[in-house]
Length: 119
Figure 1 (cartoon, helix red, strand yellow):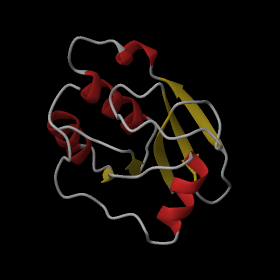
Figure 2 (cartoon, rainbow, N blue to C red):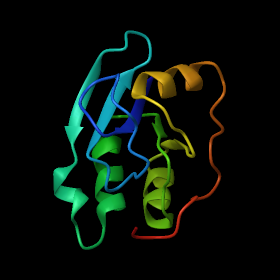
Figure 3 (tube, rainbow, N blue to C red):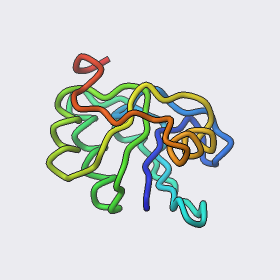
Figure 4 (tube, one colour):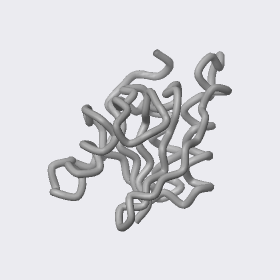
């Protein structure tokens, strides 16, 4: 399974970034091997609008099954839902801790966005 995790840095020990669309990085992690790919999200960090939709497109193109993040707004949530990417919100800690929490069944998958739009 591939899991996308919003991150402030480029490795598994980095703290998660609570923002989805404006996260500094998004790590695409293979849960079987813990191999990962780093997506630089710099283009979306300062975007006037559409950051969540663009980030959703990026992780969908990498065939992520799940997104772990702090907050996901309504437009990004719709885009992820359309791409069949499940969202685990209100997740914190390091990227490695988030992956472990998901594997242990401690992450609740969201049925709706947990943030307003642009923030």
